[in-house]
Length: 128
Image (cartoon, rainbow, N blue to C red; front, top):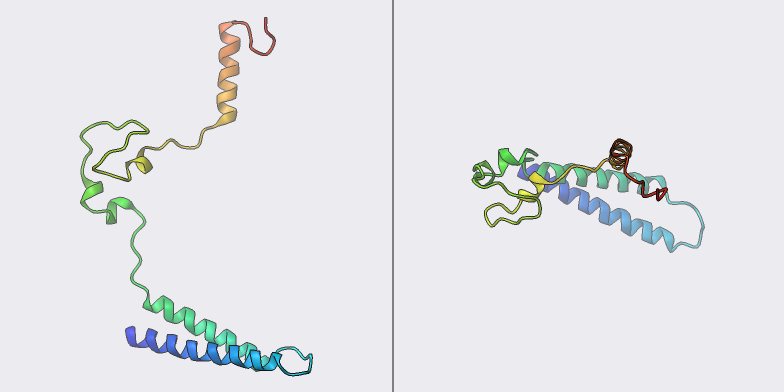
């Protein structure tokens, strides 16, 4: 794969350089004609070859699950319970594991309104 990706990247880079140079030379001409089709096709071919070469040269993707590729740090059981906001020296990513989800504001508002009606205390809105 290394030879294929290197050759595709090299060919793509040469084509891209030539297409850019040709477009620059065309822009210096006194005519106001649009960019010729062969330069456009050469540019698109160069970009396609570069994309394929870069994808072939990239390393294998790792799984998204932290527990799969995180290693020993995440596989260890945490001995002490960690509260939100605490920072531990052992696991720098513990905050990502224990963070709160999105807060449901409308649900909390309804919960407070139900509590306010249930307690019968003076409401903060009416004042009595």
